[in-house]
Amino acid sequence: MVTSRSRIIVALDLPTAEAAVDLAAAVAEHVAGFKVGLGLLHGPGPAVVAALVGLGRPVFADAKLHDIPTQVEAAAEHLGRHGARWVTVHLSGGSAMVRAAVEGLSRGAGEAPSGILGVTVLTSLDGNSLGEAGIQQSPGRLVSKMTRLAANAGCEGVVTSPRELKVAADVAPDLLRVTPGIRRQPGGDDQTRTATAAEALSRGADLLVVGRPITGAADPVAAAAALAAETAELGVRRPIAGLESPA
Image (cartoon, rainbow, N blue to C red):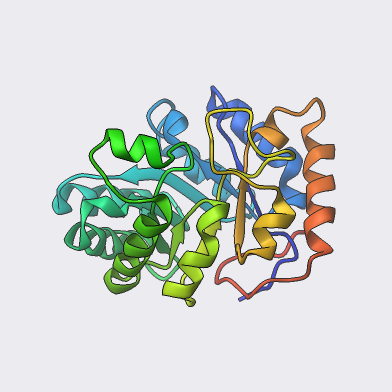
């Protein structure tokens, strides 16, 4: 287990596997790992996970699995065999589904470190959006319930917006807290519950998922280096199995 000074997982939401791998290789020395989202997983396919693993950083397969337990178990196992360090599932699928994902990923990854991350409430949703879906709870209350489910079902961590980090930490302090919605200036796009990297780390984030501030920058390498330097000044977080220290 190596403690990395970087806690940045760069979200490679790019149109092709080639573009994703090229950008990942360029920023690798400044980041802790890479995230592969639905666009790549349903386009080039999960083989892109294996290609990124070859760069020596852990890969987060943001598959957001949500189906009957047998299907989720099979999908998680498949991603584990491709080398995914983490795989996401929607906690709203229930504890049986989440446990199936944990078992499938563990079997697929074998001896390599692996863990399921439970998605609590998407950063694009707010109270009004939840109400439209028939969920009469605030994001905070829903995150609390989902985090408890994640802990009981064997997840390694949860994915939660910066605003609910303290809620997740209070409910299950041992779970890894993975935070998307990192912006230089919060707001301005399809993610509504956002924060700066410094704010998220101060609230207890363990890993920061950063996409557009790096991938959309005129110079992605410079943007990654600047963010890595900025967050390193805030101190090293708790160690995470399988997280390589940047060269």
